[in-house]
Amino acid sequence: MPEAVSDDPRAVGASPGPSDLPGRVRALLDDLDAVSGEAIGQAAGLLLDAVEGGGIVHVAGAGHSLAMVLETFYRAGGLAAVRPIWDPAVLPLGDAIRSTRAERTAGLGRAVVEEAAPAPPDAAVVFSTSGRNPYPVEIAAECAARGVPVVAVTSARASRAATARTATTLADHAAIVLDTRVPRGDVLHPAAAPRTAAVSTILAAYAWSRVLAELDDLAEARGADLPRWTSANVPGGDEVNAAMLARYRHRVPELTGTGRPDPALWHDAGMTTKPTGDDLYTVFTRGDLGGDQRLDLMEFTLVLEGLGLSWTRAETQDRFEKADSNLDGFISYEEFRAIMQAWAQPHS
Image: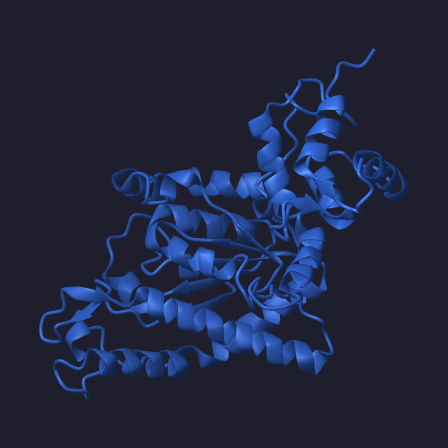
C-alpha cells in the first residue's frame, strides 16, 4: 500500500498549525489506520489462531520498546496468553548505556529466543521502531526459523533513516508488519525542526490496542473464548485472574517469578535445604492473590505448583488441611511457615 505521508518529519501532519502537536499526533494516528489497518486485522487472526491452537504469544522489544512489552503483559483487558522474552541488559533503567550496547550486541537476541524455546502453534510480536539493531532482528529471525510467525511492530520510514547495524531488518523476518508511521528521529516538535515530543510509544500502543479490539471481534465471530486479564481493582477481578494464572503459569514463568524450581531448595516433593524466613515470606506473598495475608486452597495449590511440588488434588487437599491448624479454611503466614519448614527437614 502506498505511504500516505512523506518521510520528512516536518511534513508529518502538515495540515495542522505549526504549533499544533495534538493535531500532528492525530494525523499520524489517521495515517497508521490508513496504512496498517488491513495488517492489524491479519495480526489479530494470526494471534487468535495461535491461542486457539494452544499456543502463547512471545513478545519482545528493547530500550523504550520494552514499554510496549509491558503494555502487552499482565495488563487489564489484555491477552493472558502472553510471555515477555527479554534480557535484563536491554532495560535502560539500571544502566542506560549498557542497554544501548546490549541492543547492538550480536547473539543476544538469539540467546533470548533459545532460552524461551517458542514453537508452533506459538506466535511472536516484536516491537522496534527502527528495526535495525541486532537484538530485535535476531529475535524475529530465530522465531521465524523455528516456524513461529512474527508480527513486527515497526516504522518503515524510521527504519530507512536509521543506521543499519544488521544485513536485514525486523520487517524482513515478519509474517505481518504493522507500520506505526513513526517519523525518523521519533520526535515531532517543533514542526519546523523537530527535537522533542517522541511519539513512538503513543503510536505503538494505539496499534496494539487496535489489534486487541480486532482480536476480540474476531473471537466473538468465531465463538472463541479469549483468555483475558481483568482489572484487579474491580469486583471479581482477582478470581478471574487466578484462573488465568492457573492456566498459563507453567508456560509463562514471568507471571510468578518462579521460573524453574530452585534445586538448592527443592528436591522432588520436599526441600533439602531449610529456607529462610525471607524466602518463605516472598513465596507466601506472591501466592496471596487476594492480598489478605492468607491462602485459600487455590492459592495454596498455585504456590506449590510454582515451587515445583507437583501433587495430586487429593494430596494437596490433605496437606492444606494439615497446614490449617486453626481450621478456619485458610492458611496464614505462620501456618505456611510451619508446614514448609517441617517439609524442609532432612529426609531420614
